[in-house]
Structures are given as C-alpha cells and as structure tokens.
Length: 171
Image 1 (cartoon, rainbow, N blue to C red):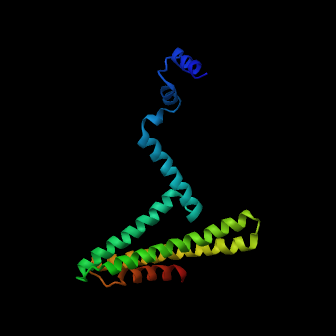
Image 2: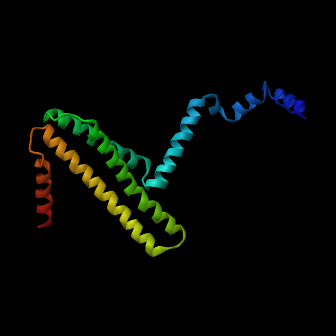
Image 3: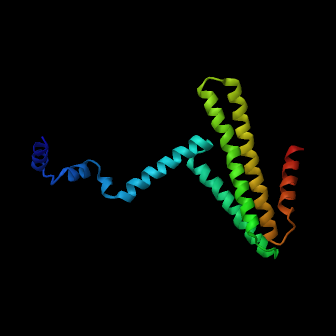
C-alpha cells in the first residue's frame, strides 16, 4: 500500500510524502512563521477568555503599566529618590493583583452566564466593569503624578487640573 501511495505521489511530481504535505500546507516550510501564528492566536484566545479584552485593549493595558513604571523611574531620577528593587517588586505585586481583579469577576460572570444564572452573572459583570474602570483610573492617576514630577510641578498638578475640568462639567 505504501509503495502504491509513493508511486501515486511521484506521478504527480512529488518526491515524497513530505513534499506532498508541503504542497498542502506551504507554511510548514517556515516553521517559525507557522508556530508564531499559532502562538499569537492561542495567546489572543486566552487573553479574551481570561480578561474579557481583545488583544489590542490588553496590549494597551500592558503598555499603560509599562508607562507607569517607566515614568515612575524617570520621576525618581528627577526627584533624586534612589531606585530600589523593593519598589519594582511592589509594582509587580500590584500589577498581578490588578490583573487578578480583572480576570476573576470576568471568568465567573462568563461561567455563570453559560449555566443560565442571570442574576449572579449581572453581579459579576458589574464587578468586572467596576474593577476594570477603577484600575484604568488608578493607572491614569499614577502616570499623571509621575508626569507632574518629571515636568517639575507638584505631584498633584495634573490631578487638580483634571478635578477642575470634571467639576466644571458637573456644575
């Protein structure tokens, strides 16, 4: 049977089963490209299922964390505060806690929704949106504080401006 299959492939100008497979899946010739595509798509699915965010939103959130830590380092240098590994560890723990606070209610909401538990789904969905908004708000405040220090202003400079604008809109 194997000889028959090999002769059949050769009649179609294929040297071997692997050349036939390469014809069916040309991306297999580029192992890195194929595995990178599978990896990116797998990570994208995990991000969406665990955090409820599409890839762009998740990347932007991670970028926000990087901007926070980067601007914090620059603010430390500007204000001549020594940079300590303790603060980096504290940032890492804070980020992990933030990600857990985003993931936990989202996954529970999706889980209860799949089982038709509408009331508890609404509660966890609300909690997810609350934590997500609060974390983005805290991240924004932290970046604004760092930018104020970097620009030589009081730490609360941009926060006060923001409060004034919001207060003006509410009146």
